[in-house]
Length: 158
Image 1 (tube, helix red, strand yellow):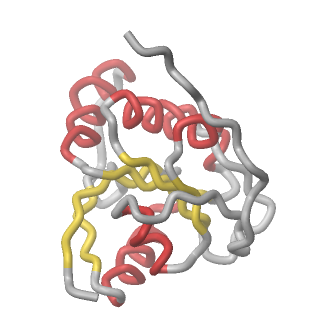
Image 2 (cartoon, rainbow, N blue to C red):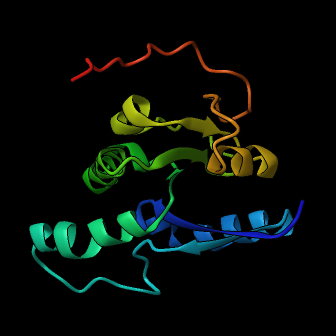
């Protein structure tokens, strides 16, 4: 695979900050370099107002990215911030890819990912890269087996 660079926003809980570097190295080995606009402890957000954080910090970062990756660990599903970021990415027309934490067991996906996600993949670099590129649009369990079929959300035409 030739080397390519993708602008992404990785939605996650801050407990998983260090694991994002592992994900990015994992993909780089397979030829995909990730430029990540998410807020981490390395790039902290010191603002206090949730509305300011959403409008002036997160929305521009999500807008800049072509794809949102949702890093799924046990605490992710309960994060109001993660669910808000997913909804915003959907609103902005971004590809939304859920990635199970390596070795994840007993995790549940955030409700917004279940509703708006384009793909949900196990810890497999080729599938993650395919999903980021829009070539892989399946929903998988943590072990890579297919999830139950999902209803397709239809929106009425204008």
